[in-house]
Length: 144
Image 1 (cartoon, rainbow, N blue to C red):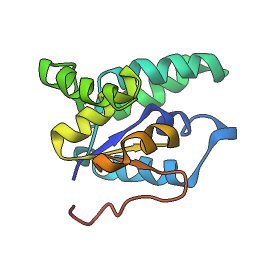
Image 2: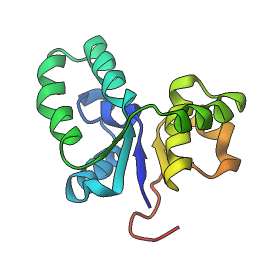
Image 3: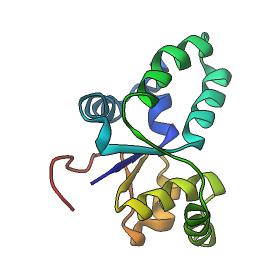
């Protein structure tokens, strides 16, 4: 199983007021086994943008925290025709274009999108490609 990391998870790694044990667990798992994780290419841009709105030293946090993760072996999926077509299906289910890309990537690779966005997850819960991690994490070691 490939786990798709949402920007909402990554931001919690760098903002003290937003720290969450489930986000930290994902970071630990990602560091240990980066090949089990993926992000759409927009992830880096989203995290960079959010950090600049809320982090006192956003550039340093991004360069020292996010860039090493992106270079660790995690799959960084560019926008492709296939991903765009897959995202359209999730847009029609009510997701934003950004969120639809995460869901479509999860669908395309047979993975699971890990997000703190409860509303987005609820819109597509029946598709079984997302997990709202506010209260719990999926079992990382078990095949799906």
